[in-house]
Length: 135
View 1 (cartoon, rainbow, N blue to C red):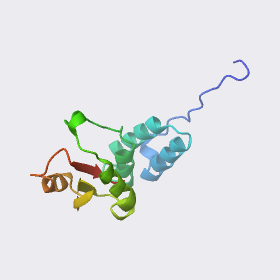
View 2: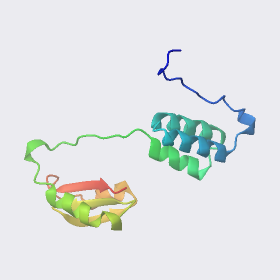
View 3: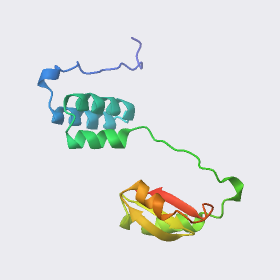
């Protein structure tokens, strides 16, 4: 191996019979410490295969899942969303972990349920509304 070449030093795979949820959590944190989100996600999945009801492993799987985004119809005729974005900037700390339904920068609903927040926007002009999950 030439000087300066990097080697991959993966620890040997532990025996699944001796693994505990905490050992998976430690391995996930180590992977995250190296910036290896994909590896951490794989470790979380392996841990959940053995411990499907472990709450912290479930949380890691949830937060390490690949990001998804989608575009909803609207296009250039959508009204200015800046009032809603400003509302989110001002109030996000108060609504962490909730879906917020906004209409022209005014709160219509806040809920843990996406369906409830979306329902609160029924009948409103889709060009004026914003539905956002606050992390």
